[in-house]
Amino acid sequence: MIAGAGPVGLVAAANLVGHGVPVTVLEGNAGLSEESRASTFHPPTLDMLDRLGVAEPLIAQGLIAPQFQYRSKRDGLIAQFDFKAIADATAHPFRLQCEQSRLTRILLDRLRHSDNFEIVFSSPVCGATQTADGIEVTVMRDGRMETETARWLIGADGARSETRSALGVEFEGFTWPERFLVVSTPFDFHGVIKDLVSVNYVADPQRWHFLLQIPGIWRIMFPIAAGESDALALSSDFAQSLMTQLVPGIDRYEIVHVTLYRVHQRVAKTFRQGRAFLIGDAAHINNPLGGMGMNGGVHDAINLTERLAEVWHGSKGDAELDRFDRQRRLVTKEYVEKQSIQNKKNLETPGTEFLDRLAEIAADARKTREYLLAVSMISSLERARELG
Ligand SMILES: Cc1cc2nc3c(=O)[nH]c(=O)nc-3n(C[C@H](O)[C@H](O)[C@H](O)COP(=O)(O)OP(=O)(O)OC[C@H]3O[C@@H](n4cnc5c(N)ncnc54)[C@H](O)[C@@H]3O)c2cc1C
Image (cartoon, rainbow, N blue to C red; front, side):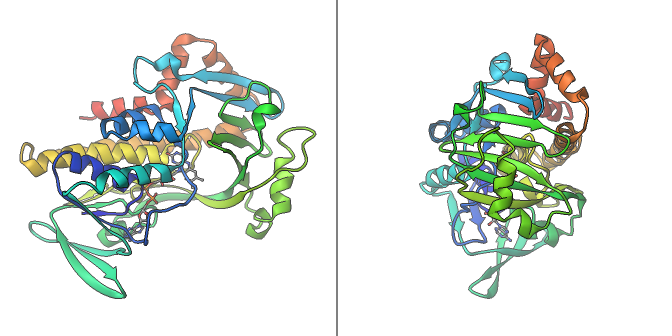
């Protein structure tokens, strides 16, 4: 049984069903989420989705971004990286810019045809109790509590995971004082910023931003200081005032969407408790710089379900499942958490140390390769394998 039909829960379901394991997904909402959130798929995530047969339709709906850039507000382009340099390590040497809601739709369309798959909407999980040979899951339906049983439960029910609460697992970490504002506009930045690519990080000690393109739209993310109120941050004048700092001479943008996020860095104290597991945002959340939240969640889902399928079919024993917790939790702590915090510091710290280091990496083929293996999360997967 899987709680949550987000990208991570549905990838877990698809991999289990693909291995002949029957799955029921309980989704709290009445349908799949339309929310505009993750929009970057990294190369190894695309490799995994390819094995599930869904990379091709996803790529058809997205935008292929072979390069990304670091810029500074003061000096413009500092370094450009091309995933071509790691084309021997992945079948998809690019980032795919595409909304996560596209992936969930593609996965559900595929899964619906399987006899081994069931999804029940409007069924929030609100409790879980371990028994000797299974798990009893409490679900709220039409205002009434019902109990269902499963052999295993995967909590993929997002940052506020009820599964995590029901298991009493601590969500250790902190919340950043600043929030992040995402402004969406159809404005054509390629026409006004020379040599711009689809993924661009712009450092500035006063107010950094990143500029990401998805089909038909650009998203610009800015930090909002603790002293700037939510009401101010969400006003259209404020968004316009931030946007006017992007390109000299352009002082009005068509803004189609503004969203304000609180940003956390938290990792669950354990990803496994008996017959229950936590994956994706239920297990870890981080700031979105580097696009590692959903990608890391997909990596959790594949790591866990490969092992769970073997245990289900009897070819491996229960101890195999502890390896999921060991590998994914350590990699999340060592890599995703550290790297996402560092990414934020790099963009906001005064001085040119980080930008100088980047320019040096970009000028050296061996350093570029190492750097790209890290930012694409390939190194984190290698590290997980090393942990055994
Ligand atoms: C602005 C922004 C930009 C981002 N950009 C990126 C990016 O580019 N790349 C990246 O990798 N990540 C990014 N992220 C993070 C990414 O969105 C999340 O990591 C991702 O959504 C996690 O997927 P998930 O399936 O674990 O959880 P969710 O997407 O939150 O899905 C959880 C599902 O569980 C359901 N649910 C909740 N409670 C219950 C319950 N009690 N019972 C049953 N179902 C329940 C929810 O309705 C939902 O359908 C970004 C996040 C933000 C906010």
